[in-house]
Image (cartoon, rainbow, N blue to C red; front, side, top):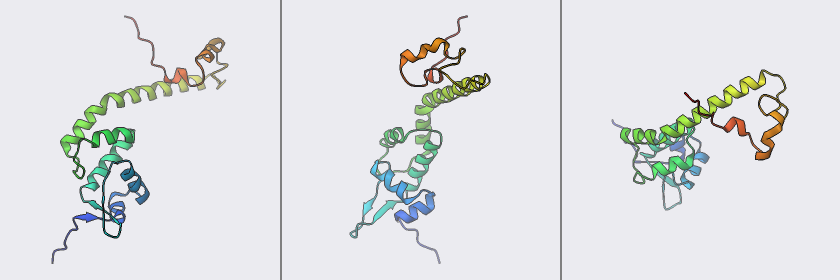
Length: 155
């Protein structure tokens, strides 16, 4: 006897299969990332393809892509379509530059933090190497040096 596979999933089934909490799924739905239909009793029913959409969302989040950008890319898919391999590749291409910039920023932050901690003062206001004469105070609040791109080296 072959078990019949339901064409739709309840929010609980989707949560169990995807490993994502029901509250997160409802949030994704409010954000327009996934879609459901409502039964006459008001219960959510999700197309099985939603499992792949949720996997795409979680994988994208795991590399630091904000939900707003994920939503922009998912808007290119029909409402209940599952992301295909080609779709994933195109999304990856769109995000490669942004991911590389984030990686470079994190590496700069790591390197600057490591060298600063080495002096022992732990104060960007007082450190003569990082902020001589507190010159950065004129730029207002914020981690100006940690966020800054390194100057271009001349050949």
